[in-house]
Structure formats: C-alpha cells, structure tokens
Length: 366
Image (cartoon, rainbow, N blue to C red; front, side):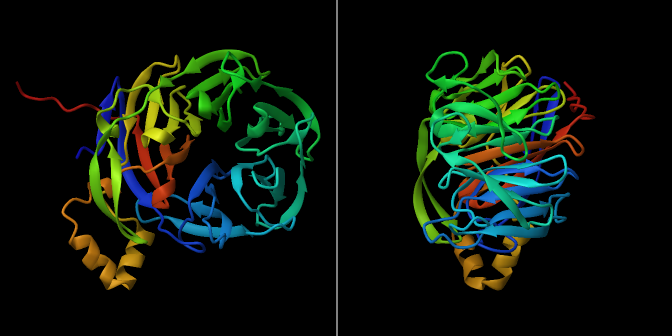
C-alpha cells in the first residue's frame, strides 16, 4: 500500500506510530484529544474505559521514528479536584499551564507544566459562564481560553482564572449554530474552527465568533467487508468501512480539527475512520486512512514481552485493517516539524504523517 499521498502540489508521507494499550506509562487508554505544548511536545488526554483506571493525561515527545519518549503523566481518575473522570479537551496556556476539560464534572482543571494541580473552574449549568459537558479547548494569543461548551451548543471565552469574557453560538443547524460541537482549533490569524459533530461539518468563525464558512458535507462510508483482526485484547470480527475509496469531502460526525500555516484544514472524520484534508477555501483535497504498517516502539515492547501475541499476529492472513484508523478523534499540526499527528483512539496509538514541502514528484519515462 502507498505510504505517500501526493495531491495538488502537496505530499503527505506516513512517518511512524506511537503507542499501545496501557492505562499507565508508555501507552494510551482511548486517547480522546491532544494539543501541542509550547516546546512542540504533545499532551494527550485519555478517555479511559469502563474500569476507569490509569492516568488521564500523557505528556510525550514525538520526534521521528523510534524517538518517542514519555515525559510525564498526571491527572488520575477520580472525583476530587485534582482528578479527572472524562477528559474531553486539553490546551496549554502561554505560561505552560495545562487546561483539561472534564465532560463528567463540567469543569476545567488547571495543572502546572509539571502536572501539579493548581486550580479548577467552571460550574455545571446552562447560564452565562456555566458549562455542560465541555469538550474542546484552545488558548488564544491573548492568553484567554475558548471552551467548546458542547452540551449548551456554544463557545465560551474565559480568562485563565475562569472569568467569562464572551460567548457565541446556539443550538441549530444554521450558520454559527451547533449540534454537539467537539474539537476546536485556531489558524495563524486567530480564526476559529469547530468540529460540529452532529451537523457533520466544520465551521470557520472569525476571532469574534462571526460565521465565515462551512466545511464538508454529510456522507457515510459504506462497509466493505467483515475482517478478522487481532488487538491487545484478543481477536475479533469487525465491519470494515471502505474509507480509502470513499468520496473526499464527506464527513460523518467529525471530532477534531487542525489548521497548518498554509491554511490547509485537517479533520478527524470519526464516523468514517479517516482524516480528511481541505484547502483554505474548504475544498476537499484528499483523505488519509492510516498506514501503520510498522509497529510502534512501545507496541513492539509488548510483542517482545509476550511471545503468544506474536504467534497470534503471524496466524492472521491480512493485517491491513490494523494499519488503518479506527474512530480517530483528534488531530494536531506541528508547524516546527510539519508533522500531522492523529489520535487513533480505538487502536490506542498516535499515527504521524509529515507534510513534505520539498517533495518533487517522480518523472516517469513514457
């Protein structure tokens, strides 16, 4: 299968994967969302599973293939102020503080750069400044935080201390209206991009919340076949969507969004198991479906420690479905490295692509 996608002067090259299933340490427990740190490192918020064990936030260095490193982990499961139950969004402030939204508690928890709990703010409700199942969060250039108040179908802007500054949006399907919005991102001009989950689109707003553009349209990828797969939990049969051959530009419950310095827009197309890429005008360019043909360093450590797992892998006729995304939830673009980092949630890993700016297409001799 091709590892490089070339379209309209852009090349996207698969680099490597990071992760394995783990509630603690070098792995993830259903990674929900991500953000870049001020030094280009990555914070990953884990949703957890029905057992509710493990750390909720990983702080990692991405690097190149084999260079991944766990820097820290914090925010254990629980109901206390310093705990998280269902983390839904993560952002890093200008001073390095880490802000984590908690869908269950309808609060925002603040940790310092070393993962020590500092404070929390937010009150459950639907009034001004109150939150109902907050999702994505992002830090503006001013230092204020924009919170996707998903249950109230709006965006709210807060100071780092939690004081309400402004709000916009309401329930609906019209321009500037939302239906369970999820992820959020900013471009270099401060414009706001929101993954409007149940409206199957991404909305672009001005820095003041004025509607500018709608990106994507609803479409569901057909199921291609049933496939046998092996995971860290054992073998199973699953329905496999034909994401690779589905039309570009359709979205099915988009969850995450990112924008690169060129204005290209990356959307985690959750329900279609792929990453959709649009240009700055919202025109579909292509989509990526996951290409993890090489085991991650952390995943290989699990294989090495469990010979029976390798035996199970070697008995599978076609491992291709394990290369692919399975409900990707978030995406970030690192402008320093040109890396596109995708949270491959159900695979408990990150997949990393690189946007190659100096790529020259091969010249075929005709």
